[in-house]
Amino acid sequence: MQDRFVGDIGDFGKYGLLRALCWGYGGERLRLGVNWYLVSDQGNPGDGGFIDYLHKKSPQDKKKPKTLLEMCDPELFSLLREIVFPDEDDFHRMGRVQGKLQHYLCGKCSGAGDPGKCLSKRCIAKVELQGILPGDTLFYSRVLDYPQRGSWVKAGYDFLRDCDLVFFDPDNGLQVNSVCRHEKMGVKYVFDDEAGIYYGRGQSLIIYQHRSMEPENIYLARIKNSISNITGREKIKTIRLRYRRGSARDFLIIPNHHCPGHGNLIETRIDAMLQTAWSNHFIKYYL
Image (cartoon, rainbow, N blue to C red; front, side):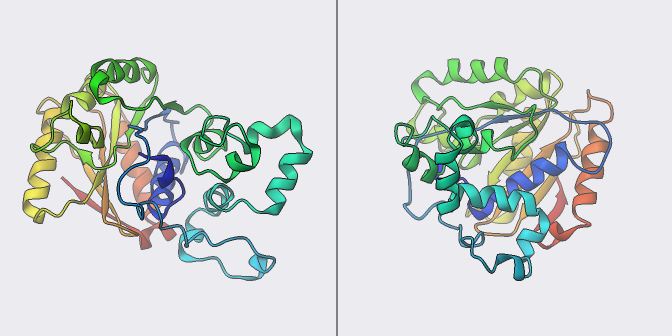
């Protein structure tokens, strides 16, 4: 994950799914942990640029029909738009309500020393602060330092120990044979053993997976092999949700068989979600 991706069209689907799994549609509450796999902004300058779907606020907004994405989760849509397109009202409100600056400013991004710059900066700290995900969510936000990857992995594992469901958000997804974990490009991947230690202590997992250019059969075989490694070769009904907006991406959902009820609860919530406007944007498969 990179700060500049916050609020793009892929981010909207990601948070919509996480909100549905942890908050939505009744039943037991699942406490969420987010391991951002955070890296500094890098790569193609255009990455993270799919933000036009949010559209800037205007006086005519109340008269306009909601877009297909906005209908999925109007609150989420509004919260992300506040981050991506702060308007004059946001700046005025920030100046008037000094005691509540924390709601508008993250204090962590490159603009932290200047309230105006901070308000205008897209970053994960604002996602953590503005109620986009449940209030008891734990966020592991330490930047991934590839020479010190071992200590970084252990710190995240310790920090997220009390969560039921852990989301991994690397730039590219699961490991590939051509990239080693301790090289620069390794920060873009979660390696099988890094996710496996969470599964081994009883947590269910969600892993972001960018759809690579591989042929479909090779892509799926690689993903299935990683999931088998993560679960210790257990036979797990893994759900693959394809999000169809922006670049192609999958969300790999691995319920933990050692947590009674997780599998049914997660699948029930996904099915309920796909009975709403989200059905225009997600397709469900099994692995």
